[in-house]
Length: 123
Image 1 (cartoon, one colour):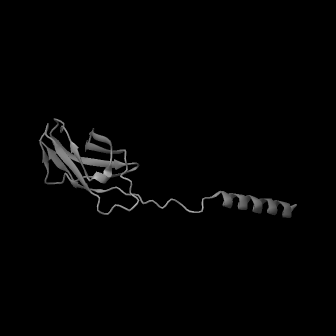
Image 2 (cartoon, rainbow, N blue to C red):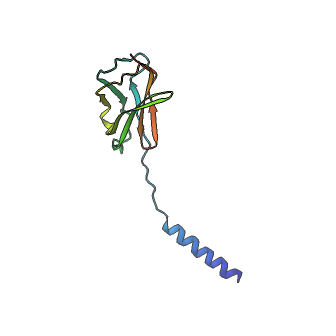
Image 3 (cartoon, rainbow, N blue to C red):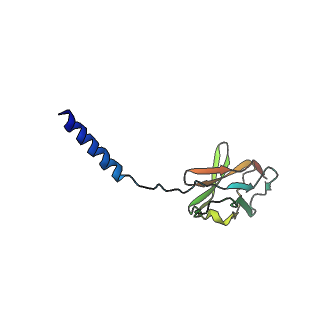
């Protein structure tokens, strides 16, 4: 009886091992570092501005994370700047900066990963 249980357990382990993938997806997680805006930046509301990020160290299999998003964030405020764009471009033009003076950060998100800019001003 004990041998039968061990044989069944062994066969179950073999079946489980055979169902596992032989090679895992080796894609790297990559979110570029925001280079602009930075601490010396001042955006004028209503103006056209650029958010830029560094893609020089992107892994070779980086697909641009189509579906990326940009947000303007403050302590109690979040404004969507852009949705569903390609990170491999290295920048994105903001058409109309909101009329809400203060100190902000830009948040760049791709899947479950993100980076935030340094604090900058909107006047």
